[in-house]
Length: 229
Ligand SMILES: Nc1ncnc2c1ncn2[C@@H]1O[C@H](COP(=O)(O)OP(=O)(O)OP(=O)(O)O)[C@@H](O)[C@H]1O
Ligand SMILES: Nc1ccn([C@H]2C[C@H](O)[C@@H](COP(=O)(O)O)O2)c(=O)n1
Image (cartoon, rainbow, N blue to C red):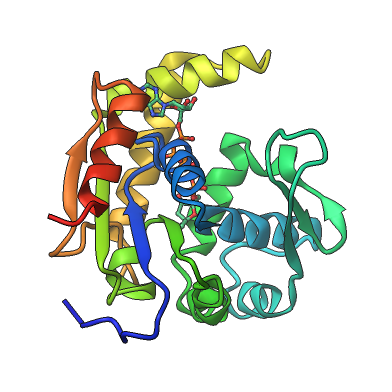
């Protein structure tokens, strides 16, 4: 592990595949610690969305890279205590960004090296006192390799598809479990196979398989890792 500068704010990285619970666990752990939160997937989703709105071909690496460089992305606290709002080029795109289509577009543009380079410093800028919980695919390997605490969450693809199915049903969306399983497996394969910053655990990450483990127990396990021995 690269040693962290003694002056740098502490970072807990939480990486893992889609539906492993990164977003849920990161939010609860950040709240418990009073730390900042980086939802790096939202940045990739926002670039995919902006590229779509501009009518770009997502395989046009130059155009999409330029789009990543100029897209304005802001996170706003909700007025009613609900979900953090993501504002893309002045438009609140929170609801559009949570769809499976937005996830697939994000996964496609995330394989473009220029896009990742454009988002690199933006992500590092979230590291502020008293600390940061960073959720993504390459938080522990590429963006914060010197983070003192690293977690890699997993769960079986079947369980992740069931979780996503329940989540979408609660939102009134009608998607089959089989199609979600297929999408999750395709996204995992693309995220893990790309040349730049592939989805994989950092060598010094603690692996937690959340299959069948309730959210509260996963949060407790992560918070335990941060307690001094
Ligand atoms: N340990 C758990 N047990 C049961 N359900 C869970 C668990 N963790 C998360 N969930 C539920 O699974 C769904 C997906 O979780 P979440 O959005 O946190 O995953 P994610 O890894 O951030 O996914 P993505 O990468 O696609 O954004 C949510 O509805 C969440 O409440
Ligand atoms: N650090 C990250 C975060 C996200 N991505 C890409 C790959 C994911 O499939 C997609 C959406 O992420 P999610 O919101 O589901 O966490 O964005 C990435 O490559 N690196």
